[in-house]
Image (cartoon, rainbow, N blue to C red; front, top):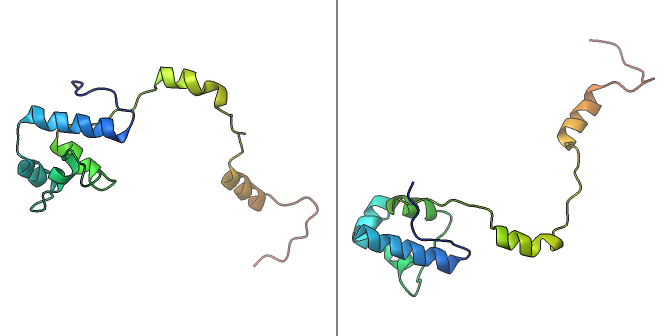
Length: 118
C-alpha cells in the first residue's frame, strides 16, 4: 500500500485528504457517486465540497473510501500518548461475569438438598 495524504487527527484533516485524493484520481464526482452506489444524488460532491454541505458518516464512509481506492489505518500517536499519559487512569480488571455466573449455576452448593430425579 502506498501512503496518500498524511496524518489525520480530526475531521477537517480527513476531509482535506479525501479532497486531495479525489484530485489525484482526476475523475468526476458523478463517477465516484456511481462507484460508491450513490447514483443521481451528487452525494460525494456534497461531502467533499469546501463548505462540507454533508458529513461523512457511518453508512457513507466505506463506500466513499472504496470509490477513492483508499483505506484508513489507525496508528499510535506517540507524541499525544506522552502528553496524556499522566492523566490516564488504569481500570480495575474484573473477572468475566458470564463465565463466573455459569460456573456458579453449574456447581452444586455444599450441603444443598437435591430433589428427586425425573
